[in-house]
Image (cartoon, rainbow, N blue to C red; front, top):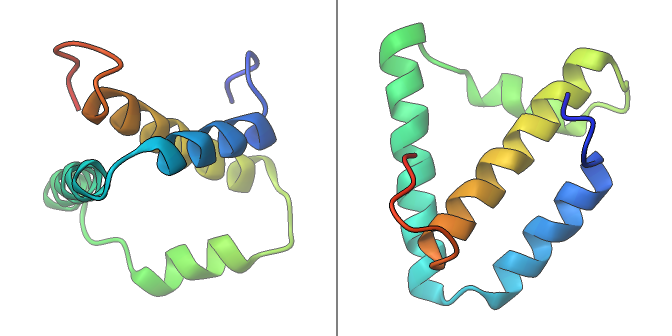
Length: 92
């Protein structure tokens, strides 16, 4: 896990970026994250929605659980920053 930022800080930053984003920027962000997921599914196989929901609803804080949540927040933040003009030609 990234030691420079906590999950709560990442979550708060994502919320700030979401509130500042326009509807069109949020739509573009959703499209890019969907493409990232599709790429992963093609390379690694399907990710069952029930598995994701179970992970999100889990009250068990294992290292794996926290790593997945943190990586998800960092992915969201990265795409939001790129879509909203924070970084030039970054790759998704």
